[in-house]
Amino acid sequence: MKRMLFAGAAAPLFLGLLALAPSADKVSFHAAKGLSVTRTITAEHTLEMEDMTVLINGAEPPAMPEMSMEMDIKSSYKIADTYAEMGPSAPAKLVRKFEQLDQNIQMSMTGVPGMEPETNLEGLSDLEGKTVVFAWDEEAKSYKKTYEGEAGEEGHLDGLQEDMDLRFLLPERAEVSVDDTWSPSMDRLRELFMPGGDFKIAPEASQNSMGMQPGQNSDQMFRGDWEGTCKATYKGLRDGHGVIHVVIDAKVKTDATESAKGQMGELPGGAQATVDHVDLLLEITCEGDLLWNLADGIPASLNMEGKMKINNESSIQIAAGGQNMDMENIVVMAGGFSMKMEFAKN
Image 1 (cartoon, helix red, strand yellow):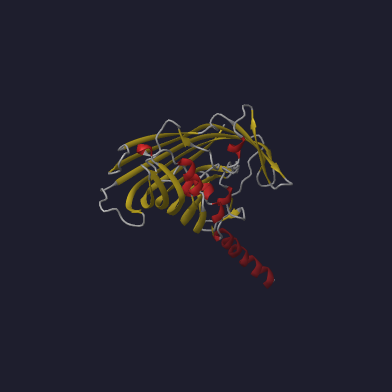
Image 2 (image 1 turned 90 degrees about the vertical axis):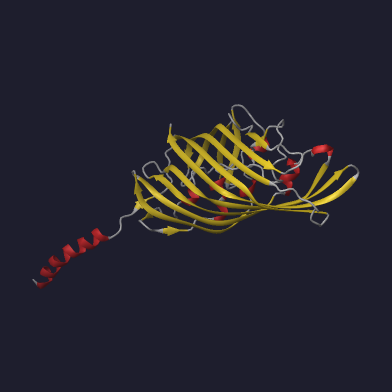
């Protein structure tokens, strides 16, 4: 009888403890076969020169003009994906159409001899309008990439990445409660800043890109080796979507020498330049929210904002008028950036 009374008294306490226990949400990727989504991505980087050091044949020039530089980079992408076949945790076959791949770079400079004070560059990609199929190769453990319909350059497929769902930001365990935290892979963090990989965006051949520092084209600064911290925290529900708050404090070291060699052209006055090396160091701190569509198992939106600083060190040999000189250049630029992604079912 006493046991029955004890059990009866304990039952309400047990139910109360259950009510106090944090509820869990399932935050996982589980897109349905045949689902089609359109991703709209906009990003802006605004940078201003903080410092500049120039050495000519190892010494500072006797008279350096006062120089300034500002740069505003805006990117806008619209990409349609269809999950044609699904695997256990990722698409087995994905059909991607690059509907819009735009980039605009505006620069203003003062005190730079032979350069226009205002430069506007429009970035273009041959991938725009093309459709690419990502088919999982189980033996190779990678995606085979091919064009569907109108073909493009095979070399443009090399830098493309299948995952534009930001799956690497998800927790290892799908069931998460409010304030659960985890650390996404630093090795994959560049996928956040280069969603979809390298779209081979470059200024039109007719445009003068010499106002840019060597190696500073497009998304070059994100392509190196990442180190630092990335912390994700689950914040619960917002408008029916799971909210993952992401905080990043990272450095990226990039050897941009080969990219700079392809970028350098003829200098003013017919001078010729040979690139020795270009090293980029990017420091970035940012945070934002990834909203996850719990019902459809795909992202709903992403908003990120932060600050960055770029240290660009280059060494170039210049031949002009029968004379050769070695020029070492250190440029430090700093500013802010923002990124927005919207995911809509078609």
